Amino acid sequence: MTGEHGISRPLKLVLAAGVLLAVGLLIAAGALFVATPDRGEAKAAESVDVGFAQDMSAHHLQGVQMANIARERSVDPTIRQLAFDIETSQLEQAGRMKGWLGLWNQPESPLGGYMTWMRQMPSHDRHGQGSQATAAMPGMASAEELAKLRGLAGAELDTFFLQLMVRHHQGGAPMMSEAAERAELPQVRNLAQQMLNAQGAEIEVMKQLLAERGAQPLPAPS
Image (tube, rainbow, N blue to C red; front, side):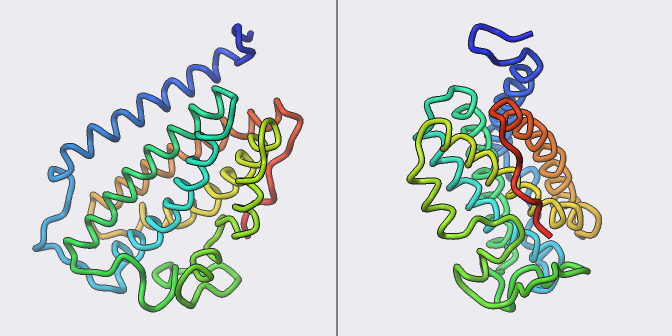
């Protein structure tokens, strides 16, 4: 059954839940000191905790960038709400992880290359510094794809945003899964698991939105 705007009732419920999640994350940010490791728990540069916080915050910030484009330029209220939810939650989470890095006296970006903390590196090279290294992380959009997104409008913008964001979420999932399993601090493990759960649900919503538009997701990152 669809409502007056053509949005299915289950999808409305999922999106409404996303809004509540975003609000809850903002409230959690106000009480961040409760869930933040103190300076006595400083982590080594090569630890899972530090590597995840560095890499995932960089990954998140591109998600925020893409969501900001869709929220500002889309005329579809469903897309704009979804983009707002993603932008809000990922910005708060990135800020939390960068705060942890400051408490641990660690840089916001890794010195020895991205994803070196993971047990199994993706098949293509992750080393190097700067924007090229960041773009090589799984699921990250290229500079050309971001430029294309900015240049689109209407249904084409909405579809391409959904495709990029599904792939972006899929690319971050292995990092979240490994941190949820292997991080030393419970705060890091819990946040990684929360991200994994929330983004898994968002992927299903976005795939449904793509199907409603007669489109398919991009190939998943390898």
